[in-house]
Length: 507
Image 1 (cartoon, rainbow, N blue to C red):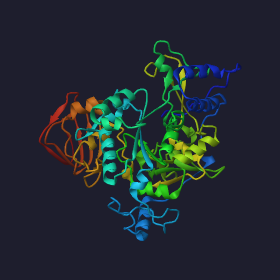
Image 2: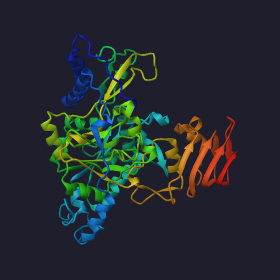
Image 3: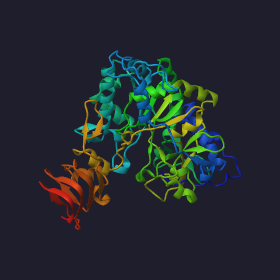
Image 4: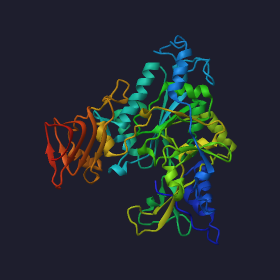
């Protein structure tokens, strides 16, 4: 996400809101979507930067840990409390502080919906369709694995947990076509699709709606995943879910293979009676590679938890933002929401959550730097943590955060270092996850990767693999320990039937 850019001072003439309203009315945007955009636009006009300096926050040093909660529950749990089609005790015995008496997994699942964010195209990996349709393991796409996880949970617990995909105008058609072919039973269900809204691009010079007659579609942009709240409200889905007895919503990115519906997290969230929780709520101990991700903090003025994204950090505080000993916990975008409390919070704020603005300055045609500059106004769904009086966060295992963001991730995932379980989850099979660094010049895009790695080598015993230059992997290659392979030419070198162990060499 690009750095926050200060807005120009508001022009002397008042920018008529009607210009935006007329445009959004014509596009059929709901009142909730328009209200959310209006809040962002008003912040832009007022010159709100959205920046949060370190002096305004306290770092979060301690949070509840899932492992400790599970241990406490197991010590006092009556494992016979839940035996109706369940194979284990449920995680909320009465003697664990803040939790409900024991209840059945099936009962909780009937009150639960799983929502996967599915609006991204994976353009950074060279994709032009919904990223969830990318094959990731054993001929399965992200969407296949997600759908099979839902079906497995339903069958095992005899409880029809609800399933929702939040699509964008860029991914809806492709996603539904794939579901129609491979999982038609899911597509036929009520409210399986929640459509993301569109947001007007704002002309950076005039603060009026951006215009681009060559490609009018480029006058619009995604509003960020904070749009989930106006989308739920404006579409009527929030009320329909509540009317159907759904109270708990688990939200995660479709490309995060670690973000499965965990019953321990569900039971803890239900028992806590919180309105919002970040993983069982998705917070992990930060690693060096995560230092640019949004982190949790506590706002000094009111003591509330908040999420500070990288675009919200002033330049002078970047070193503090990236200090993983100071800001220890980052947002995995796995969120749990109590829908009844969300509804009450929205009602109390006239249908618009007061999410902090994230401004991105781009050009109206992002592929043409000579076109007029625009502001894209976005929000992050994790920022809602500051909108609830009773929000919380839980530290979860690193395995809960396993997104596939690059071809390095995909290369490792397709190897024997990972396996697909009976539950259609992807788990580490190797002793430790391999660290992969492929040459971006030759492997950055999926089609490049597939051309150079038609057969992914064995990485079961690999600690790290660095590839410099074009190396084409064919059948029978194994990597063990720490290996660096270098090809100084531009012509791919083919490898077949070889084992490399703790070596750095030119091939």
